[in-house]
Length: 302
Image 1 (cartoon, rainbow, N blue to C red):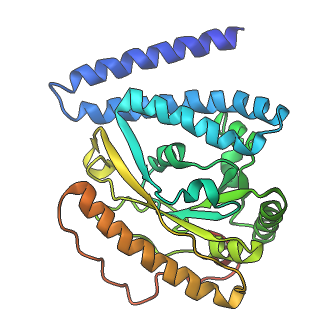
Image 2: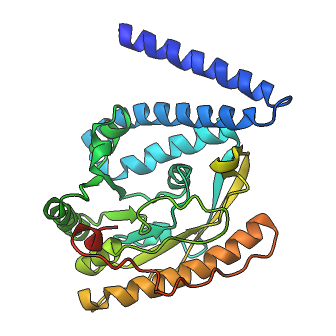
């Protein structure tokens, strides 16, 4: 009981501090960065806490596969109310609803992509995450309870086992997976993507399911940490047509990765230009196909 009381005091104190920073931002604009950062952090803590309960209840009710979808919606509404930021999903063909199971992949810009997942995350889908997150209070508990596929990239044997298990569950439970093939955040001011790792594509081929690309416009006008920019706004997201993998083998993964990245990069430039209302050039190739050349765990995991 005392823990809940201290937790309540903590939340009230953080809310008061956030409101004070928002008021200060009228005189000191950079204070808005601190205010929204704190608000986003608190929204994540509250959501993760709720997510633990949501996951337990939904698992008991037999709907555990949708726990991340339900928890994501909580985060969506909390962030909209506390920061004024949301993502607008363009999915005219309803691929988020009809593509199941599938490997959903998206470009990865900043920590704000967690909110993007909250806004677009389909039912019967789980994310992959590095194994170290499993020990985090609240967030790690929620992720473990809601079916997250944890991956230890330093241990290729465990990593391959986790991916093999994911492929099996995808086929038998019709469970989709969301992955970021860049492997880390780009923090780019312009619309570009890091080279893709091949894990998501190996998984899709192994499970025999389509890849559904999800492209998020570059949102450096909303969040750009280097310059302490954190504004309210609506960020567009577009769900592209599924890419089938039927009949493909591991020998086809390099070309599948390259061609998928190329399609996503073109859409990223077009979507970002529309969102920021300024012309943007297609980034030049770095001399390769935008695919990570590696071995071991890095080659087989996103």
